[in-house]
Image 1: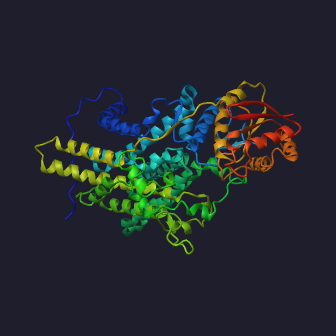
Image 2: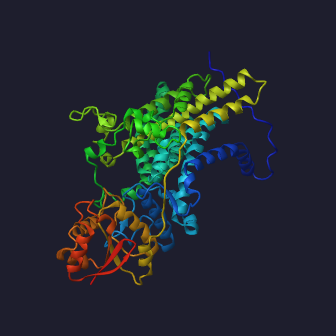
Image 3: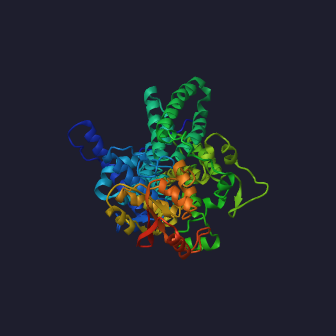
Length: 592
């Protein structure tokens, strides 16, 4: 028997739409129905970043690290628009060259669009605002996709809430701005699904996937690579029922595939432009193996959970928890299982597509070889997984964190859980039609269980403001170059980059520790011998006015760096060097 059509959603009588153009009426209908869901998802997103809200212009999530780098990127891209410079190249950094920002993942489109906010409120505020928007939009787009299928808002809200609160994003909020920007992933797969399934004009089909793919590339190159690879799997599974109509399947594929490729090239354009500048370096296999996930990472609650996070951390410590937090959620998994109970279903094949892609992305997230309890199952004779063989392809050697594929597993588990929640809510409506308050109670109860299961806890925060040495440099007249020591440390390099937003002096700097431009590599090779006479002569020839020495790292605990008293004695004995001032632990040495 043919399946019965899905039950129509019961919607209370609508208020009269405002008079005016058609788009105004459509906007009013959308706002009236979606506003409660939007507020709910916004509240959940706020819960994730709650500790920074007291001082959003000075507080950032996490300790000093990559987060400082992305605050700098946010600041420079907005400054560049005012200065008439390229937002992808900072002429002040990587002295004596220019710093290319697109050698690391950057959610460049959203940063550029938010530039007016940065001009008014500063880069830290915009950085926090974008994190919040990424989290909220990720859940809202999942909600809209589910609602488009089920026409039931309660279940769609549950799926969106799961994707908002995923601990993966909470962990990456400690510094990985591009990997918080997951909003483009559901858009991509939704666009791909619609383009392959729904009848429409060929040009609209192409435009849909072109725009969605370019948007993914503007958010993260990791996500672009993941979307392209798993998009092929999604398309194959989606087109399988059309194999009895091969001409139709072929026609849609020939429209979608070139559009996806064109969108990928557009989204990756700032990064592709740097392929010939000798900056990108493939990761060594041993550098990627350590990031391989344990299957337990998908089912172990994250360490920040306020109720049982500490217990989980004591029973099974996770030193690389930022990259390996991929808890799917017990409630989400149970609801995902119930997705097969919901009958009838508008697109029954779609559930199997979502499950297939969720499993495929989970296998890739396990990394290069099988690990158990954070140790290779067989260290000398590894059990190689698909990611190992995929890493042999051109450009895939740039991928270090294969565990990031797991966010696509989270996405499709969230979608399946939304279907399961819809079935549960529908059961309450069908079996107790005389009690219309039951479906909203079911929805609220499921949302509370999800918040309990996936509560983000309290993230750590740091204060990020210009340092005294940055303000000292800003007070010095003229345009000149300085260099920081010790060279090659992110903890020195990233705060120096951030400080350049305030003093605009030239500095040798890099934007990714594994992809350093030739100018910085040359500087670092010279700086390791400072203050030997040949190193001093080479640095002086570079045109540097000051050497800034961060004395915190000259404590005898960072070999091969000497103790500060030893280095100070060498400075005093070296002709042409003069200590000008010490500012909050930073010694300023003039090159005379």
